Amino acid sequence: MNTPMPAFRWIMKQTWEHFLFAHWPVPVEAIRSFVPEALDIDTWDGQAWVGILPFRLGGIRLKYMLSLPWMRSFPEINVRTYIRSGGESAIFFLSMDASHPLLVPVAKQWYRLPYHQAKMRFRADGRTIAVQSRRQSVSPTEEAFCATYRPVSAPFAARQGTIEYWLMERYVYYCRCGRSGGLYRGEVHHAPWELQTAEADLSCHVLTRGLGLELGTPALLHYSRGTRALIGPRSKAWNQP
Image 1: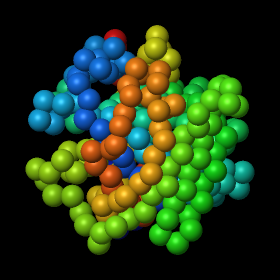
Image 2: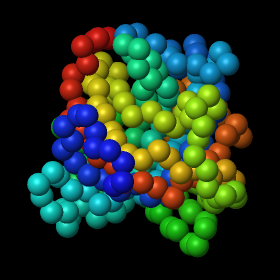
Image 3: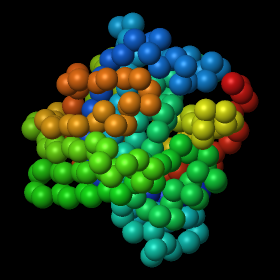
């Protein structure tokens, strides 16, 4: 990693690959009940935003340890929105789906992340990425998440003052495992995102049905080849819900 080391004490390295950033504007009141009252929902032009991000996670290594051979690369899908707390811009994770049978229970217990166990397929065929996912808690006949996406522009870095910068350049996250769980805060560190505009075919209603959101065509689609990230310890947030 060619960026300066983080100010926080990192405990884990990860590699994130083949990101799709799919984003929709939504009314603030549509997601207010899913975000702890202690957190302010951040807005762009008066709208809250919801992002769905499929990607492949790998290269997991705890500090001072070799890579964990049993922690192979696996797909993940994050559903998130954007908040402010104590003057800082941050992400709030609404849900997370992953296919690794060991990661999900460990991450829910240790990091208090809102994970769901899922059966997933992830295929990178040249410039085209295909992802399929079905939560194990739902019926086999229920609709699955499906996405096929690819970059369609030259790479660029988001400029300050743009919506791309507002959405993507955030390095603090908050999460709550369960509607009544405590509120937790964590930090990540990586180089600024190298983005490309993207095109995608999405079927994602199953991920937002529990939020009461019926999302249509994404307003914004971006792709990133990925980055290497340093993960800090999570801590209980001082501003409890």
